[in-house]
Length: 92
Image 1 (tube, rainbow, N blue to C red):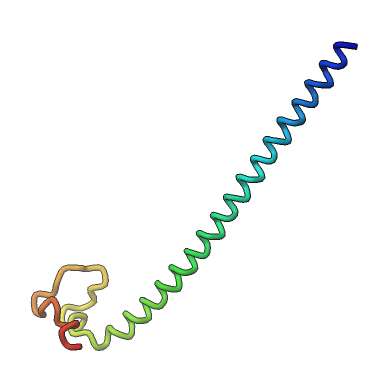
Image 2 (cartoon, rainbow, N blue to C red; image 1 turned 90 degrees about the vertical axis):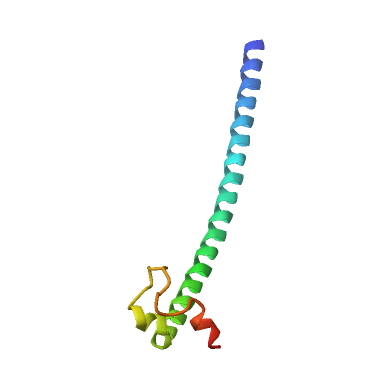
């Protein structure tokens, strides 16, 4: 009888540990899902910002003397040698 009782107690402990582990995994899963939702919202927000900035740049390009002076400079951050650095901002 003692052996059966020990086995029953061991089985209860095992089931309890298994339940606790499952609970921890569910909590971790929920936290990761929340983080994923937050990051997806951030990606959406940044994508929208990128779209707005791209549209603003496209609207600005036809009027920008720096763009016409030296050609497309989207990836070139060096200043144009023919136009003062603050030319676009000083005309406002």
